[in-house]
Amino acid sequence: MFKFVYPKSDYDEKRICRTDIYRLITQHINAVEKIKRNQEYYKGEHKIQNRTRAANAPNEKITCNHAKDISDVASGYFMGSPITYENTDDADIEPMLVAFDNANVDDTDSELALDLSINGLAYEYLYVGKEGSLKSKVLEARNCFIVVDDTIEENELFGVYYWKKKDDKRGKTKYVATIMTEHYIYDMVIIGEDDERAIKKGRREHHLGEIPLIEYMNNKYAIGDFEQQIPLIDAYNTLMSDRINDIEQFIDAILIIYGASLGDDEEEVSAAAKELRDNKLLELPEDAKAEYLSRCLDENGVEVLRKAIKEDIYNFSHVPNITDENFAGNSSGVAMEYKLLGLEMLTTIKTRYFRKGLRKRIRIFCFYLRLKQIMLEANSIVPHFNRTLPKNLAELSTVIANLKDSVTNRTLVKLLPFVEDPDEELERLEEEKSKKLKAEKELFSNAPPQAI
Image (tube, rainbow, N blue to C red; front, side, top):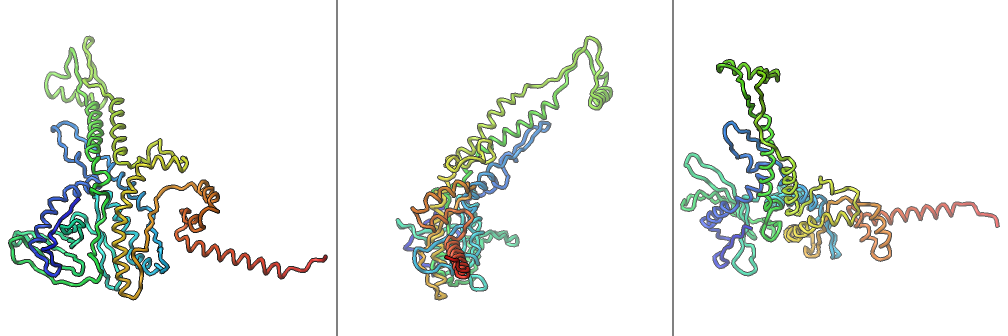
């Protein structure tokens, strides 16, 4: 976790010290190597790619990207279905939902979930677009950090987003930084700690009520989902690469000839070797013999080791291998939940920390909507996370039928995975019932009287 502390007594959001920002940036650069490594592993740039061997030895570099598989499954299960919101107050939250749609927060949430799985933390930046609506943007975790004060509450003081800009003419490296405080945004170019030519591009108000940079964490220590399994992934890659190398060496085995030779000089030996390769034919005297010098390949032992390493990768990451033969598709709901117990616990932790960032996003949106005379209470808006899990509709319908008189219809409708808005679905259901009842009344009133 990258936590930067700044003395509260020295902080003034109207006077941001350029030298302090430069020192914080340099400290952050030294601390983000693990994020860079995680991103490389997700993209398939593993340690095995840098392995070297003797000049004539086969050197296969097999990359089995379990890191990508773990992050894709974990983030898909966590955020494959959009977050839904409800208001415990009487106010209509439709304006906020429209603002969320305009900001494409569903896409933002998916990107944040993947960044969390890879990096262990993620950052979202909220800003006002040209048309006057709030926009959401996921920023690169390697270039962002939040600074808190030195009190026990660790209140956020400001956020920093920066990137390098080379100046080959002067032989220096510039840092273009955006500093976000509670009320202001600073844009500055920092040339160096001792260089007084830092360029401040001005200070502007953002009118969002809070620091518009939101930090999301994957867990308490900001650890990625596959980060601690990287040594096992390296071992698996090495094992698979050496397995291919051994087979290549087995194919290129040395031929030993007893009691004869392929020729009297180098030219005859080369010609005989070519004849042997092309025609697979070798003629020897009566007492001579030939055989290949090769070592025995213990494929059974290697296969046992491969399965053990692969099983450890998924077991320790708590993410199931959904392609495993034991992960059957015809399992009952309870059996499926037991198989996904580790992933569910992992996702529960993600949800708790992600909800903290969502609360800040909701507060900022509500504050901005209040400037447009749209009053919403941020604390009454509750986000609901939906798991991406195959549903047994027949089993679910039985559960709904059994609970019909025990819980409200809205709660039952929320259980259906194909219903996005329970309130709207109940309104449509009431409309259909009303139309059906009206049609029945008209039919009954128009029916001819029956003789008694």
